Image (cartoon, rainbow, N blue to C red; front, side, top):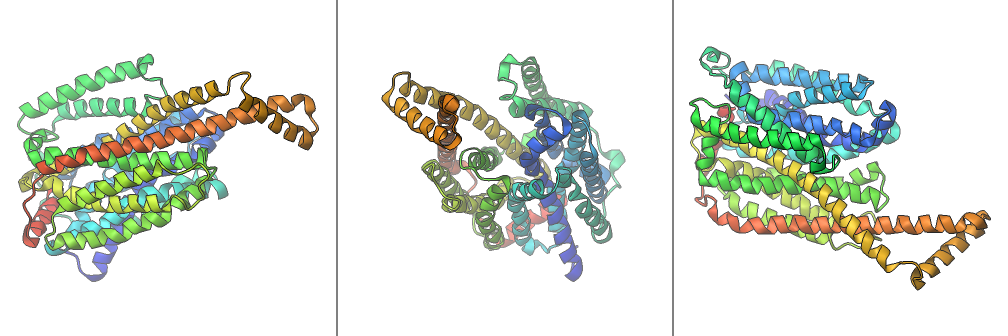
Length: 526
């Protein structure tokens, strides 16, 4: 039964806030790694495990949320997840060692993984069936705003406070959201009544956790561990392959699988997951590449980087309810997907064309295109994932689609890391070869820079050494800059190549009544 008046407002506020809180925590830590490493007395490579552990927990729990909500009852599972997330946030803030904070970040990821899909289902229940596309638009606002607020908020906290505050800010939000959810979210009539009849697929869950967890580890840590030269990467790669193959075979053979892979036999869902994978790749990779480019090459602070992302992102936030309203009137999702992918490709291509002396707002137009592209892809792909499925198959279809988006993001970041490192080395070698010993250009630059240093410092003897360091830093900066632009071009290729696959998607136009029924079934299925 749909909520009314004040209760509906509170449910919207609670569910969207919980989802935004979880999404913020996927990116807020990125700008705090240096401070955390210094405080805990470890290196950057070690502290980056706080990102990896959270991502591994997320990607394991996401495909299981439908089963867990059914087994424990959706409201109970939602409340428990928020409590776990909030408690783990406090323990992260209080951690004094590397192992301790890695463990609590994993626990935080277990709690946070449930907040997205369960929040969405509860939000849908607060609206009448014909209003649910609008509810999707409201929820989509949070999906877009969360990852962007992370670096902005994290940068502000690091500049004005200390790193534990990036976790402590979750505590009041989590407590208030838990109290509001307990008070205003109603239990579904069937919650908790059929637990004894639910078969628990322990083997499937174990295989899924081992396979996806190890795959996520390989993608997240591969570059840092020098890929297959590392024993840990080799072992995890083997485990990932064996466990995932075993999981697929086992889940297709049993009657009540933890994740129903049979739904991928639906052509529409199978091809939608390809679009979702590329959308996740583009979304997460762009959020990774642009901030690093801005800080490493353009000289932005963490806070300035976040602020530069915020105005164009607000465009996407404003677009979400509009797209939801259009889809509620029966507009097909496919044109949105095509236009969104073209806009994202245009964003990546334009970003690959900027000059190294850009000012802080020259990226606004490309980032605005990215925002429009994201807004036109997120909600339509959710809708397209279930087009053609039976209502009973919606939970499996949505869970698989969400997992594929996360894996697309992990693959994209791993690919970008490797591609940037390789192309940086190549560009640096090329530039150094053109400035070899005896080069007139190198001689002139060394003379100009060393004379300037000597004039300022009076250190004639050390001026030449410092001049070499200046030139080396300049070459590094230029090589990284060219490598980041190459990465934007690579993203463009991915988005352009998948667009022709749109012809394999379901193109039958749905009536508003059909879409409302689909939204209702999605909500009931969680």
